[in-house]
Structures are given as C-alpha cells and as structure tokens.
Length: 420
Image (tube, rainbow, N blue to C red; front, side, top):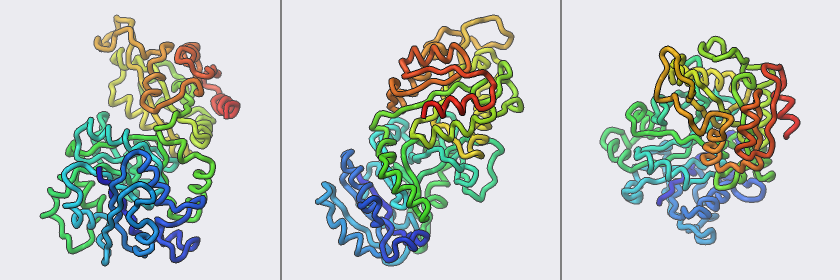
C-alpha cells in the first residue's frame, strides 16, 4: 500500500528554533520527526512511500535517500513551484495505482496503528476516511460533524459558525483516500493553480456518504510553534507518544455519567437539566493528562422507556462534550446501554425491553470499550456513584472500582487525584 507524506512545508512559526532546517528534519529527542514517523510506518509493514517535498527539498532527499537504511522504499515528488497541499497528488496519480493510499501530513507528530485505520476504511467501503480525535480546545479547532454511523456531514473551519453543542471531533490530517476521488476531480479543478486538499478535494464530499471519520485517541499533535514542539519532545522522551498507539495495551478510567459527571436529576430527559458537577471537568482533564483514557459508560433506560430519542440523547452528550471542552477536558469514548427489561411504560420501545449483557452491573459496556481501544482492564479503574457501577467494574475485573457520593462537588476530582 502506498503512503504519501506531505513534507514540503516551510515551518515558518518554528523557524526561530531551527533556522535553515526543513520542518521534517527538525530533531525530536535526537531524531528527525519524519524519521520517527517513517520508522513507525515501517514497523507496521507500510514501506512503499512517496514524499512530496518543496522547501529545502535537497536536504530531505540527502538525509533519507532511497529509504533503504530504514527498511523502506522512498520516491520523491519535488514541487519546483508551490502547488498547494493537494496539487502534487494529481501529478503523481499514475504512481498511486488503483488501491487506497494513506495521505499523511508531516507537519504533525504522530504514532498511530495504521492497520486498524485501514481495516476501518475497508470495512466501511467509503472513498475517504479521516482520522479524527478529541482535543483540549475544540472551541477554536476545525470540527468534523458526523452521523451515528460515522458519515461526515459537515466540516467546520475555526472561523465557521458552529452549533451550540457539538461532538469533540477534530480532523488530525491523516487520511485514507481512494484514487477515484482524484479521478472525479481531475477535469473540474484548475491544476495550474494551487489546490487545497480540504477545501477543494475533501469538503465537497461532506454529506455524500462516501467519507467517514475514524475516531481514535492516539497521538497526533501539531508541532508548528516552539511551545508545541517542546511539548511533543517531552512526550516522546516520556514514552507517551508511543504508548498511545492502539497496538499497545491501554489503561482507562471508566466513568459513570449521572451523579458522577453531571448532576443526577432522576431520569434525565431534558437537555436543559444537564449541568456538570463542580470539579468534574478538572478531574477529566487530569485523566487526559495522565495517559489514561477517559471513557463514559452509562445506563440510559430512557431510550427503552420511550422518554428520550436517540437524537435527543446524542444532543445531551454533545452538550456534555462541549462544556467539558470549554474547560480543556475531553472524553475518549461514550458507551451507552439503552435497555430496560421492565415493561409497562407508555410509549416504551419493545426492541430495547430485553435482558442484555451491557446494562450495569453487567460488564458489557466496559468489555466493548476494552475491545475497541485494546484496554488492559486489570490496569484500569471504574468510578461511579452507585453499587451497580462498582459491581460493573468488578465484573469486568478492573483493578479497582470506586464509589463516590452522588452529586457531590469535587468528589470525582478527589477520587481521580487519589489514583493518578
């Protein structure tokens, strides 16, 4: 499978630290960032690379050569004049063949299980898959709006008006693309001018049901400013970058929702009744910074009882993510049990009136998350405000299950501080 890495940027914001060095060659803990990324790809079996280069291209070519010393094969496309971040793709179309290819941005530091991402792409059968993830500042990031099946519906830039409540889902600049996308556009785009990947190639696919988002908590960070560079380097030194690759076992702190993160009001039916408990956002931010995954596991029998629709529940969760994001915190996953075995409610939905394996205290939600994120449950924790939460963690064989006082300010925060 071909891997195209866009490595032609100037890196003007970080030039004060590394003048006269192309951004892909900036050393991070003693090794150029692009070499780290290429070695990660090679370890996963992706060894057929094309680098699109421009600024100080000869330095990049001299350093990497044909790639043989790293166990890969590298070809180059040199932009003699700037072509935008997609113009080169149309020039190398024949080299790409007819199979999907990875398109990666060397401006970001990343260590990702690309086999998982490719499997997702092939399973869903789309033309494009975007790597998306939550971050600590979604309020000033570009957002991807998708439906429940992962179809990308909208692509909002930082400057665009966004909904009041939104999923914390940010485009990371890593893609799987079917060359058919290029073929469809070849006669519609003026290739004599710069071609913008997002605006001219990908955004027009929104709403067509051929572009999917692949949500992952793995490490992808821009290192375009001195502050961000120093953070990335510290993360490499600490092992954080490599540890976040889903090929490796992850640790998680599972969280109940009602009474733990937001105020318990009985069955939450009205989005206006959703309020974060004091200290909850700070607690989740600590989890984010610790290297643990922050994953909500919540029983929502209001679905089975017919009191809340799926759309209404998703909107409540978008409010939760928005409020958390405003305080620099994010969730890596939300797992929901919609079932309720007791019958006799007006408007109930019979398809959800079953005895399931996911309703806490059963461990199904935790087990599903563990499968999706390769979580070592024996090194993970469950925190909630009920005996059912504690038992669910015990049934999943978590390292520890912790019960906190319902609706108590800073209860979650103090509990998290005690763990990490």
